[in-house]
Amino acid sequence: MESIRQLYRVGLGPSSSHTMGPRFAAELFLRRQPDAAAYRVTLFGSLAATGRGHLTDRALQDAFAPRGVEIVWRPEQALPEHPNGIRFEALTTAGEVSADWEVCSVGGGALRDAAGPVGEPGAEVYSLNLLDDILRHCERQGESLGDYVLAREGAGIEAHLETVWAAMRAAIDRGLQTEGPLPGGLGLARKARSFHRKASLFGPHLQQSGLLCAYAYAVAEENAAGGTIVTAPTCGSCGVLPAVLRYLDETLECSRQDILRALAVAGLIGTLVKHNASISGAEVGCQGEIGTACAMAAAAATKLHGGSLAQIEYAAEMGLEHHLGLTCDPVGGLVQIPCIERNAHAAARALFCCHFALLSDGRHKVSFDTITKVMKETGQALPSLYRETSGGGIAQAYDGERKD
Image 1 (tube, rainbow, N blue to C red):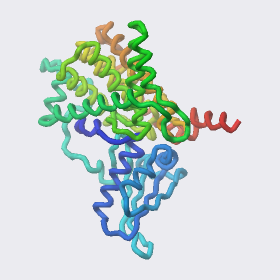
Image 2 (cartoon, rainbow, N blue to C red):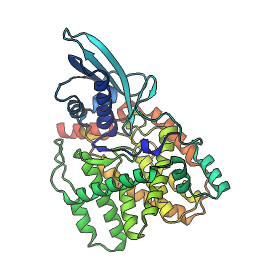
Image 3 (cartoon, rainbow, N blue to C red):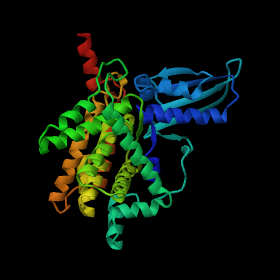
Image 4 (cartoon, rainbow, N blue to C red):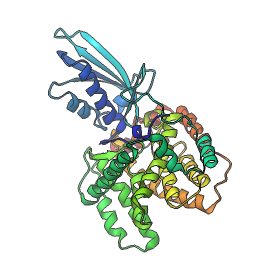
C-alpha cells in the first residue's frame, strides 16, 4: 500500500480529480512532447460532464500556456478504466496525431494509465493493507497507530505532515477573513467569516457546532474559489479534517506531536479506503469523498482524545458507514452546492463518532474493512447520474426549479 504522501497533496482547488489531476497530466505530456505544433485534449465521461464547473478547462489552459490547447468534451463517452478519462494528443502542422496518451484522473489528484499509477513511487510503504491486520500488529507490538504510520513512512514524513498542517491552517485563516460571492454564477456568498463571528456569541454547546462549521466552510470556500488547500482525501472534502483538527487543537491544547500523529492516523484511514475501494466521486459517489473524510477526521479526533486502537477503528467505521450511498450531484458542476455544506456536516458527525466510540469499549459487529468493501460495492451500484455527472439528484432538481 502506498504512502500517505500520495493522499495529502497541497494544491489549487476546486477539484483534485478535475483540476489537480488533469493539470499534472498535462504537464507530464508537455515534458514528453515539447515540440508539437499543436495539442488536443479530449475529456471523457464525468470529467467532461462537470469539467467546466470544476475549472478543468482553465487548469489545462494554464498548463499549456502560452502554447494553447484544443479541448474536446465527450460526456457521453467513457474510457473503460475510469469515468474520469483524458486523451492527450500531440499534432503536426498538418493536424495529424504524432503522439497520444490516455490517462485517468482517479481521485485525490492521482493518475493512472494502462501501465499503472503515474508519477508516483512504485515502492510499497505498507505490507499490510487491511486495518484489522494493522491493529493486530500494533496490539502484538504495543505500538500506537500513529507511531506505526510514522515508522513505516520513514524519514521526511514529519516534515511533510508539518507542511500539510501549515497549509490546512492557512486555508482556514484565509477563509475566515474573506467575504463576498464565490465564482461560478450561482451567487453563493461565503459564510465562514459570519459563522465564526456568531460562534463567539453562543454558549458552549452551540459554540462547538459554530466553530466546526466556520472552519469547515472556510476551507471548502477557499477550495471553491480555486485557493490552495490540502486533499484530505480530495479537494471536494478538504474542509472536514482541518476543521476537526483546528477545533481540537484549540480546545484540547494539543502539542505539535499530537497533531502530527493525528494526521498520520487520518492519512492511514484515507489510504486504506483509497487502496481497497475508491475516493473518487466519479467512481463511487460522494460517500468516497465526504464519507472517507469523515472517517479520517473521526479517527484523528479519537486519537487526540486518547482513544484505544479499537475505539479509533470504531470511530472511523462509523464515519464511513453513516455516509453509505451518499450521491455526488454538484449543482452546475461546481464544488459548492451541496459540497460546502456537506463538509461542515461531516466535521460535526466526525466529532460525534469520536464521542460515541469513546463512550464504548470499541467493540462492535461490523469492521471498518467490511464497511470499506460495502462502500465500494454501493458506489459501483449507483447509477452514473449520481456519480459526479450532475445529471441527476440535487443538480437536476435545482436546474428544474430554475426553469420553472
